[in-house]
Image (cartoon, rainbow, N blue to C red; front, side, top):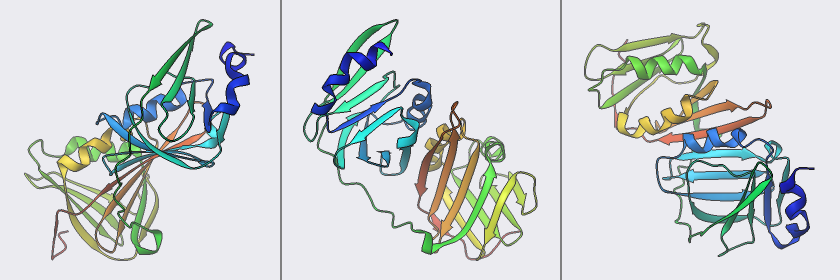
Length: 257
């Protein structure tokens, strides 16, 4: 039995939530991909943990990725975020610090991170019933789109039509097409031709999650809001998700082919 397990197993009853991992790398990549602000809001439920940064990026850690996971009641709090090195995370409840137990070479270090009153998170009202278009790409395809765009571009234009997805940079001639039957496309559902523009400055934070991901789900709703959902497969084959929302910058009246 690992030292960390027997060292605190008798203390479990004092915590309202407990999560244990044998391999920290299973979640450290996820936390690195959303670490672009000092604080995050986390929601713990019996299904897992959702971490929200700046109201736009959500990371989902399913309960199945933990070797031990217990939540007695749903809770929400705000904590400082950074590179995660803990094998065990515990929380006694509202107003209490988040306790991290770190184990290395049979030595256990205990860290306490003060929690804060969480700020109200924005509701983008992005629901499946309003989704008009959905495309699933292999992540390498979206890598190409971001790398090929003009360095000076301020806006990314995304055009969705029944036969292709097109990405444009506004500062020059950068242009990429993903045909419906392309080998990079795993699913293509376009119910309505749409053209929307999004600020590059708002999209760039999502590229942290793009790097470790294997697939990307691109969805737009009837308002033109964009959802990028990155699927990240861990070493033990468990799946985690990082989701990013972005509102359109402006409407484009005509389709450019």
